Length: 381
Ligand code: PMP
Image (cartoon, rainbow, N blue to C red; front, side, top):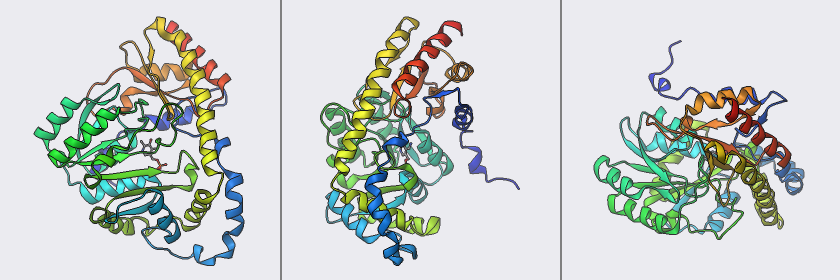
């Protein structure tokens, strides 16, 4: 059967190729954006799991907006204003998909940092939106380019990951946050703030969310994949109520509602007195691994490689001397290291040559060995 034309626009997934290679037991994978399974809060989940059978209604169809006690808890946690609303989604990825389907007509513009999260590009490609790349600098998007884009191309949305960006790890400065919010208000562009890595800060002080400077001009995506478990598939989208209502309608057609027992499990976790401490432990673990990786990467400087330091998240962006990052990543697989090449994270424009390195799902020994293999590959390519 012929597939829909919209499918042709989706990038063929090099990631799938990498993940297949990463299943080789001799391969060290820094490719996936995976949390370490050891961090999954199984002990904290056990009391709730043991109680699930006591409430049979959890196994019935539920409301599209989400499991009511969880919705209530999250409303308080995020201190949403009275006229705002939230929707529990099947991972924040579904939030992205619902927003694209509810709001984007073919040809509508969506500005995005370049490079940007592949999963967001796929979603916007699928609805045939026009992706408008804005260069990502060390402290956030190029503001002059953003203003030019807002003024000339009049995008409907600006999709951004201001905290520990995927793939670069960049965390926007306070001044950039304020400036972007101001531009969104001035040019009437809706900010789509995607914040799955925000709780994973391991140094420095948290900065206000960009949306806090333009709450009525923003939709916010949050996720529990990185601090609890991606398998639970729970994310949240929030914003002005009139912008959430259409998403609820689209979600009804997509999956009726998210998994109710999973939502009840998440609520139990959020109410557990040790959950905050759990997040702090996860951040400490990842901080240690990040430091090992950053130190090891110094040995690649003579090859013209530069690692950008980060204050949280899951990724380090390693810039390479100008090369075909795709071809180099393939060569690296032959050397026993899986990474993601920068090309994957750009829409159509030529980007910098770089690799995204994940440091959360490999032990310090594995990280060091991966960098030795990288050095070997750079020396022999
Ligand atoms: N946004 C970004 C920037 C991501 O990196 C990811 C996952 N890698 C997601 C959204 C989707 O996360 P989830 O659906 O697991 O909440």
